[in-house]
Length: 403
Image 1 (cartoon, rainbow, N blue to C red):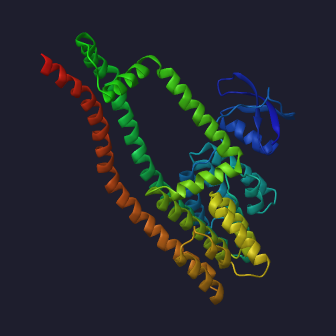
Image 2 (image 1 turned 30 degrees about the vertical axis):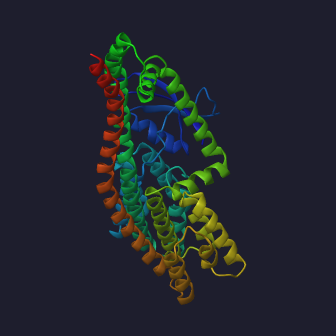
Image 3 (image 1 turned 90 degrees about the vertical axis):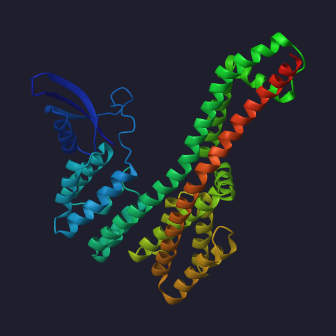
């Protein structure tokens, strides 16, 4: 993206110089004015690490902001407002800096005669490939209104499922942190004050007491080493997760096999995959292109590999459902419904039915897990604290008997 050097003045007359990254000179002028600066000179310059504005996380568009944008955009277009005007309205009122910048860039491209899908495709950080391709199909068929409505419904449902799964996964994580905090407090404050009395009496201590005392000593004097080991493990894990495809696949495979939460993640991924494919097919996106998009959007290499096999199956003239039947990831309900959809010519409808079923199933599973996790974590906390208490109390009873 071009970088522009500018000179201007603030409303108080203070001279300001700087650089800004933008899609065009006119867009750069607009963005400079938004900062409260009246530009006098705006010239394109060569981008370097020294003159490029530094911004951390500015271009990232949150899913919640994009969901709101889709619904508002669909409403404005349905009300008869032109795409250019609707884009300008939404750019001015959105609170997301990344989305605002992308929409202003799209507005500039639209005024220059570019199609909305082509303009949005240039802003890949803001507009996902699913959105771009469905808009392109809607432009080709003249059903842009219906396409936007489908997109709004799609992103709303995906965001709701994502929030529910994240809240379910976050709950035990928070309780685990509380358990660790309680253990550390006991090891640092309570255990040393009590175990110090054991040294004055002497005698052989039980193995469980020695273990707790050893843990207490390590936490008090070598806590930095524990943090360092954890940090190294996390960094190495993230590096392999992002750069090694086999490791990434193995992690997702093991997550699907994980007790209790594995089924929830699997159902959520199936709901996302079928809803995405249904939306694309119903918007007249070619099936091979739709499968390529779904493979990227689903965000799971285990399911992505099966989708890729399904695409290759279609290219060879075989049914889409054939590779799905051979995979353990997809239950018979999914494969049978897709096979019926292929045979009846209503693939989008059948995929939508499957998505509805699994979205409702995810809702039920989340509610059930939430009701089970709390008492389970309380039992775990009680067990950990009880273990430490018993380790301390056993030698104390021996001391009292000797006294």
